[in-house]
Figure 1 (tube, rainbow, N blue to C red):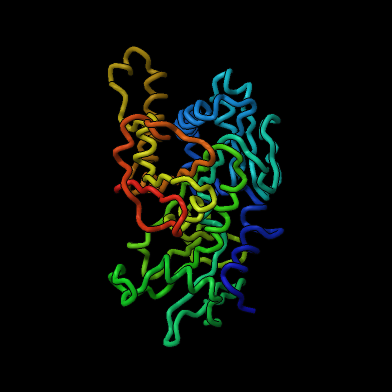
Figure 2: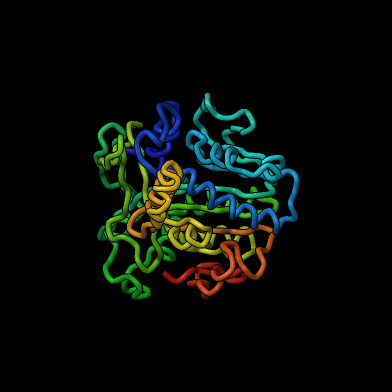
Length: 365
């Protein structure tokens, strides 16, 4: 029986036999920034040190990873943290899958967000897997798209709810209303559940910083046919919601950002990953060849780090991901979260926050 895509994705990804609940985990099927852990982990520790200082070096300092996979990133942070930080660090993975057997005992594992977090909340390629509905344009307006969970075959459904229609009017513009889209969208992905999920995650922070890392798009460049697709065993496949593959759709990052800043009451920062990681010290340049003659093993290690950094900072690949940084009850100071020299990237953002809320900031691409 055909159902809406949001319901189908929820069961296929997070049901008892869902893609993210059973099996070997996401790393067996696709590579994300979180799986390039040494380089990303080192960069996040630099960010965490700045946050730690802004918070006054609290004890404990929490790091909560939402959609933690099999704990790869948390394990790297535990391994790389310097002793003084490690003594105060409390790491938590939020994931519906069972606790991985190899996860260090010092890392907490739970299915729901903790409350009143003081520290860093991470969502690395989490929002793209938050289930959402799909709609297509018809003579009478937007109609929900239904899908057969067993085959992936689609059929037209009923009209959208008023809240969904309002979200589309604001965040997925149609020519004739404001002239901002060069071509009328034929198929849209309604990001309202992701706005809600991000706002709830931001709301779990008492003081600290929420960081979402994901691929996405902005209001003036939405895809005409949407982005919903599947991945299995390293290959892109048709999105069939039967639990056998990942189901993902790009994130409307400006909409999510507005929801977070409305909840926190403070401006956000939105920057592409290649800019963020380079500001945090990730370097994709090859090491000097002279190192190969003086320290062959060190040269090999440096070459491996440079290769991973180059992968993470490639604007045509993972480097094109967005970093959304939302502070709660804390100010990074004049240098900002990404360090001295980055403040000039920031300019007035688009009109993304409701009247009366703190304005967002967006980095020029």
